[in-house]
Image (cartoon, rainbow, N blue to C red; front, side):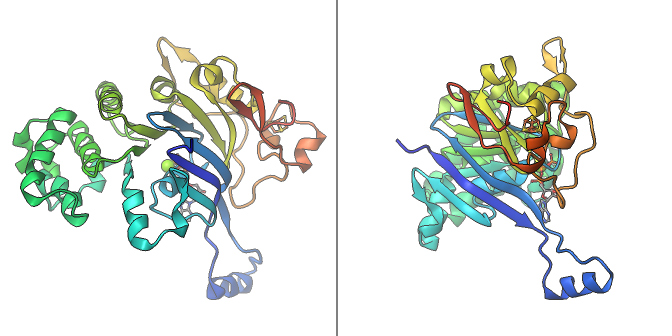
Length: 327
Ligand SMILES: Nc1ncnc2c1ncn2[C@@H]1O[C@H](COP(=O)(O)OP(=O)(O)OP(=O)(O)O)[C@@H](O)[C@H]1O
Ligand code: SF4
Ligand SMILES: [Mg+2]
């Protein structure tokens, strides 16, 4: 059976200057075209009712991959498949319908909610725009969503600025759920919240996943968050997935030296892992990534081959993949 969502060898470049930009740059003595390969031929699947965590340092391409998954940007290369059907081959109307099945929740709900709309207008809008429910039923749908996200319907008449950060994020989640998606791409959905509120929102994500039988692509740079919510975890480095495994296998028996370094940089403190922040060595420029294995300048195990040849991914244990020459 095809997975719910498959990103098949997708890549995405940014920053290719137009002719004028290139000409100006050459005039200024900067000859090369500045292109960042934000996502570099990534293959990843999300199954029905599965939670796939995506971790990696800032700038490694997590949000770009998430936005491709949610249909907000097109890949420069590769294919997005929903239930085995390639999205690019569909007519615009069918594609829009298909991509409604994948919705996105952002880090800063406060910034993503229109300050001039009430909560009720925010939640009704997707139903209205996509003509998803008869007009008479829309208010019932919104009230049902409020119940599910744990807010009293009295909040419907409020503006976003009258809500706390946690309440805003609940509304951001409800807005994503109005169109009854199968998969939600969650991009750092608790990173901006206080730790006590984070736990409540993570509980909400878990409750909703069970009651609505949802799948998540759950992006976070916080290993403790990813370990808590995920069935499977993918680790990203400079645009590539370097390791992917069931959560217990990844945290218990990490294979890739980058994952090992991430976990070492984030020792267990009580029940919490610290945010994955400081892997030793300088992060290379994404505009000029190292040849071969991108991680070789920081890798304690690098050998000559690593400088020249990008490693293929290999299955090191059932369902556990690692892209390292030594795996
Ligand atoms: N619209 C854009 N235009 C140009 N470059 C971009 C654009 N979006 C992302 N990039 C670049 O692509 C790379 C990946 O960015 P992305 O936001 O996907 O990373 P991230 O892993 O989500 O980082 P963070 O953890 O900080 O959110 C970065 O080098 C970034 O500067
Ligand atoms: S391929 Fe080489 S440089 Fe890359 S992670 Fe493996 S050992 Fe390190
Ligand atoms: Mg991001």
